[in-house]
View 1: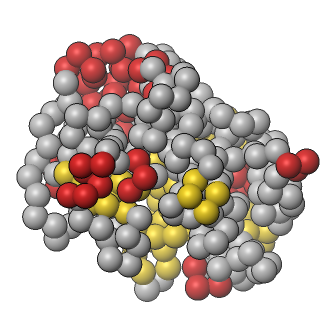
View 2 (view 1 turned 30 degrees about the vertical axis):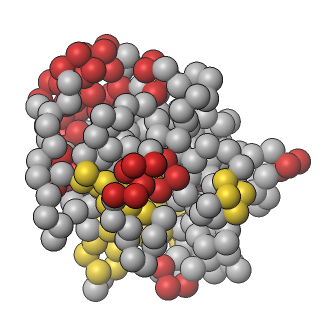
View 3 (view 1 turned 90 degrees about the horizontal axis):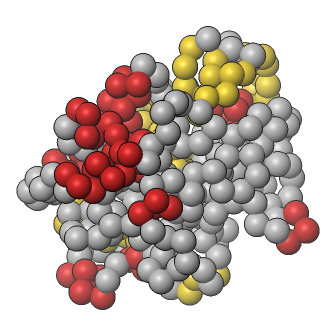
Length: 303
């Protein structure tokens, strides 16, 4: 993170890179969309006016293709193995991790973010060791069945900045979606619904996305962290997890007066007691070199 004194993290273990890269699919799973017009934004009671969700406005979108899922750990490993790319987190030497995902020693020694103390500045936290030096696998899932390397490989890659996401996209001949494209795709053809599947967050009491459950931040009722990128049923356009799981980088600036990068969709950290940004219209901002343990990206292509 900019302004923090830290040192470059050692490169990932070559064997780990090789094993993860071998699990990456050979082809991009992209969904072609014709485009059209839709009502973007929200002014309902769940919206955050200060985030610029409103006003609701009709916008047009040209045809494009977008990833069915976010880019996975295995896919990013293939990129790192082929190019030697060093992420901003590796260069800065640290990234932010939810305190509940840390081993006790790291929890005590990693500085807390003053305004949001559930985030810790963790030395060595990167896409390949997401809970700090020496960690592999999805943080928060120790002892949970099905968390072997081949399962972790299917989780969204995290601790990637927008700069890293753009480098990956260029490598595969793609790009990041615009914010308008992202929202058009996330809505899955539904008009002015808060979730990709409709108006009810948990239809018939069934979770449809990966968010924080229990009392935030110290009383979760399930492991806090990512789930595989294709978890939960897709929306009407075939996209998985456009809300919850990980925030997703898009292109462009947050506003005319704020040129930070735009993140969409919310994450596993979202909880209605402090952050109900697990909705199709929700948005937030971060500098392009920011990396976090709940941030990833999906790709887009021109048609």
